[in-house]
Image (cartoon, rainbow, N blue to C red):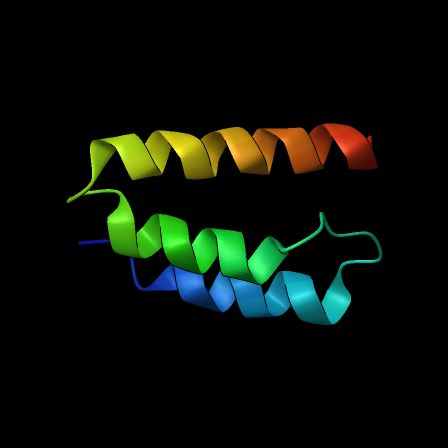
Length: 57
């Protein structure tokens, strides 16, 4: 089970973040729903998140 504050932090970032990676919310939502049940999909999601973060920086 994820920490309840994680979803609130996503909303905070969306509201106050000036630059967010592409598919920010979708990637995190997918990560939270897969990370304890589907290891392979979790690794793919994490790779996508890292790629999108690298594009931003």
